[in-house]
Image (tube, rainbow over all chains, first blue to last red; front, side, top):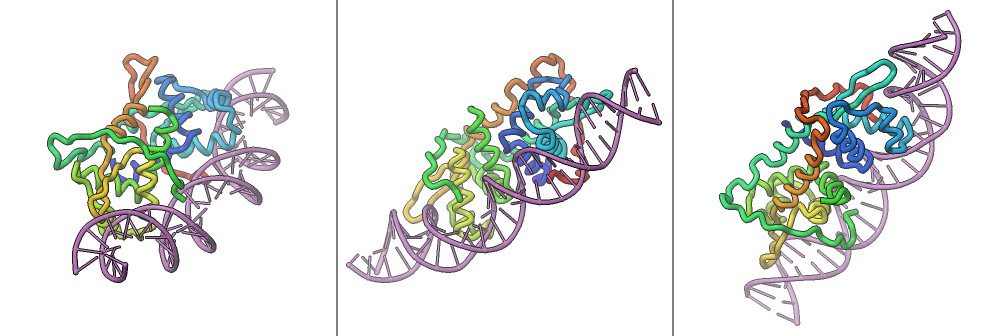
Length: 113
Length: 113
DNA sequence: TCCATATTTCGAGAATAATCGAAATGTGGA
DNA sequence: TCCACATTTCGATTATTCTCGAAATATGGA
């Protein structure tokens, strides 16, 4: 996966609503869920939902298919796997037995502004 | 990993400069890189760099340690792995032999506004 | 103690993203 | 053909994020 596409994927997932949508679809499996079902599950306004779905679609993380009047969405597992591969690429390079020491998130003092 | 932390991690990585920084650190291995080295490698202004590093630190993706006057940063592999685990959690649930059909990113017609 | 170096915080302006009502589009059925 | 339903696009407003100069803080050495 190219860096630009990885960035699209990460940006797509880096939003509470979109992460929720994506996870709903991941759990829904191959059958997926209709846009209307997603609207009902999340309580989002139609336009807002479409906006978020478009972002996920452009990133290749969600695919859809029209079934009559309904549009059925599903998660694109391969794209997600490609993203994971991109992130771990060259991981621990140069440090053979890399310690991979755990570290905790900082308590956030003045939040990046 | 909790959803809120995953969101922090994804948001942290969902920015070209921060993704570049993180990947530089991933490749640098356990030894990591000094803030000054990162500044030189990326050409970012000091304040901008600190801002981005803070975001990565708060997400727990980057840790650092002072060595004299220099602050040495390194990628936190375990946090990254936890993020990957979060994303694949419940993957393909409900669809035993899930097709995982590939799908291409949409060509982006009117870009989500 | 005083200075040079490394990095962070502050503060403000510019750019980008999120939200939603209303109007437009596409589809199936009467 | 005409209508109801599902979803998307348009347009404008509000909120958030990015960026960077300048000032502040921390450290080691003279």
